Image (cartoon, rainbow, N blue to C red):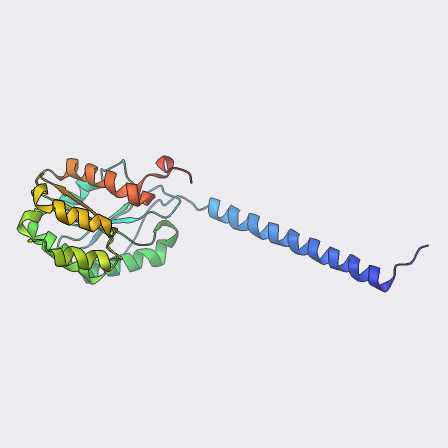
Length: 235
């Protein structure tokens, strides 16, 4: 019977070790993949109250979904939740309470993190007072409130300084509803050269649905997370 030299034995052991390690690696990959693919659908959400803030989750999802934060009463939020062409969890705050918004999002992430995408979020205001509040919130953290929609914007005196600050600190898109587009041609060109999508609309806040369809068609062009999974283009 032929004997194996010490050098040959070491070689065989090395090959065996590599083979076992590779098998374990593949097994781990399969387990991780299986775990990711078996995330159950989001069927219900139970969260403690945070002031007047209200969360309307997108049920049935199995992957992380971004957030639309609306500074609006509950009645308007129910209408906004009907934007079926897009994918988002809807958080409503009729008072624009930043602490309540942050608390509710933190609680949601702690309990349902597999279904909540990272920032940026969309921040929407449907009238002039709430648009002023939204502008304040957005400047607290432009990278987080990366998509900003302000209604009745002609009453806000939007300045170049605001646009510049929002853009430089991480804002990605700014939509002004209820303004004369001709007054923002120069600002739009300058903003886009610096990487901020700036769009203006002449519609009123009393009929937001049509405007929001247009706005979201712009947002998904730079942030496709808001498209339903079945509509997302494969890379």
